[in-house]
Image (cartoon, rainbow, N blue to C red; front, side, top):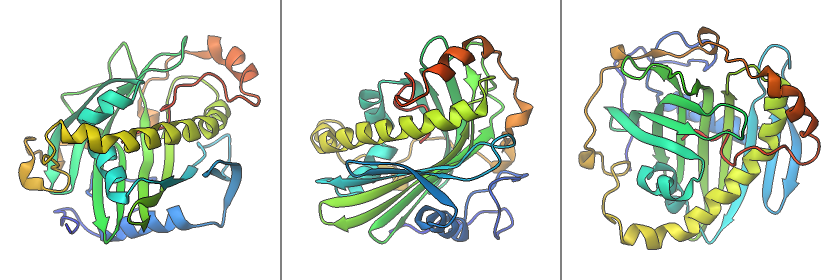
Length: 291
């Protein structure tokens, strides 16, 4: 199994919020993320049905976005298959109906890269995109993938899309048997725009279970698909296979939400608020998913 790559940046505990410089997460960061995924204190259960549960962390609603945690039991899906699905960018284009464009930009270390993802939002909202630094680490039979938003000089915000911000997003995949696992999705994402943040927080609680169920269906079909599409090409497991150009951390900077323009979408806020009741609105399946 790979070990976390050593970063040239100073090591040590780094809170995700308030990060001032771009750094590749180290082993302590992965342990902290795992602990937060497994924590119960401070989390309120808001949804539990058919093997999927959603929690929201209590925070000041006027000052920041909620953290959301979604956990799903995956029968008939080994942990390593789910890990592959989350990494396989070509397969994502097949099963993620909300994706507009997604691609890897550059390689930072053997277990970290920078990537681009844009996705469709329900009309009349503008579509979103995001640039993230993603890192991953196998831990025995378990796996972690996590990311946060960065700025890349060659990929500035586009006029036709709203640049969203991943404050902290990631997955903990835990094996529960040879052909079963549990996945925990932990995220704090600001989709920007001018929709009230309480609308974003509430809608994400409904969208996350839909996205997880969609991912599960994709996992079931993945082994057959992969056998026909470069079955041995898995650079996330075999970094020597990577075809990405290398990039120095100094080329990147942290993307803070408050530095981005707020696109005026207030005209649709009221109608969406009215639809937020029990159905969770008409949001796309992956509004809160950044991998």
